[in-house]
Length: 156
Image (cartoon, rainbow, N blue to C red; front, side, top):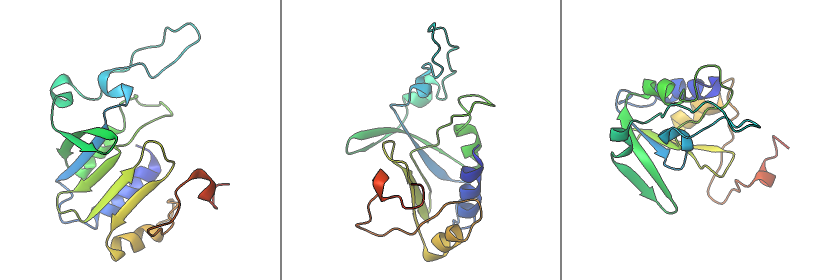
């Protein structure tokens, strides 16, 4: 798992009463979920990626939001380690769930597939803990703040 994602999960685990019961929503459009190729070579003969989700999981519950559909999985927050490893150990690219939250809804993490930011909504205590965590780039945003690429004043 990516170090920043592990750190994020470690901090958020302390701010929920249900770390063993979380929901994970994975966008149905990621090719890796059905075993699509993630390696492109000049000759077109890359190794196929194993599917992250088996046929039963792909046929399972879905979350539908405007313009997006997600596979819905449920398990402990610690399952994030397995969810982000489907490209195999040592592969530089990985994909976390687009949305995840605990059953007590103490917080929610959202990464829109077309944006370069991850948003976390939660209590003042949870947000404060994230703001003070080394290894995470965290900025407080409020309604009306832009998330477009040219609004990023840190990573210009």
